Every structure is written in structure tokens, then in C-alpha cells.
Length: 140
Image (cartoon, rainbow, N blue to C red; front, side):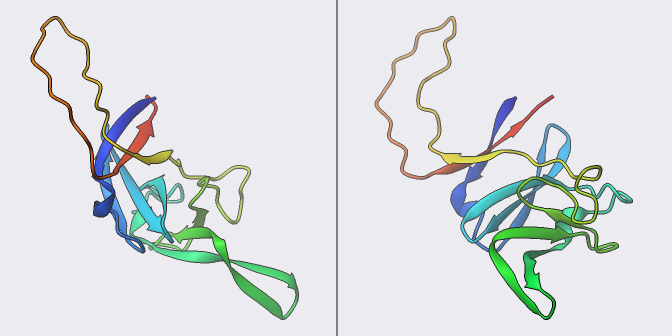
């Protein structure tokens, strides 16, 4: 898996979603309650722009007439036909065994400070990183 720097974490404010292009793929990155998720921006139903949809909390119920919204599990709703997919794993709400959208691992951390080895030697200086960056892993 290749790791890609998407920019500083401040570019991904809470409650917002942002489209990024990685290795020719359109990927939506979501910050929901401080947690980052990434999904392929293509609904498997008819190829709609999935990540342009709204993020909703998963509805839970123990019995008829009682319901509550989860504060830990979230879905993205395709803007074309309303198909819903779990932000965590990309599974569809209606057919989790067969229909899903590709999720991507997202991590937050400092920029690497160790230089890449090469044939040339250059003078180096100590460096400190003050801001965290968002990274995504994409397999080929």
C-alpha cells in the first residue's frame, strides 16, 4: 500500500467532507466528530458522486416505537437514489454481504523527518514539526 500526504489536519475541519484525488481515484474524506473516514467517491448502484451526499447517524431500535441515533456509527447517503453506506467499512445498509464501496485507511501524524537515502550527501539541519498531517493508504 502506498501512503499519500493529503495535507495538514486543519484542512479537514470537523463536520466537513472534502474530495481528494489519489492515484487517479476520487476519494471523499470526512471528519465526523473528530474522526476521519475515507471512501471511494462512486456509488456502486449507478456510479453517482457518493461523497456529495449527506452524512447521517445510524438509527438504532430495541423495539417498535422506540429509536435513537448512534453517536458512534455513521452512514453516507448517495445523493442520487439514497443508498446508504457505512463510513467505517463501506458496507451497504441494505445488502452488507454483497454491496459495498471501497474504504481507505486514514491516519494522522507528523511529516516524516528522516530523509530518503540517495546517492548524494547534503548538509542537514534539525527540524521539528508543529502540525499534524492527514495520510491515506491506497493499494494498487
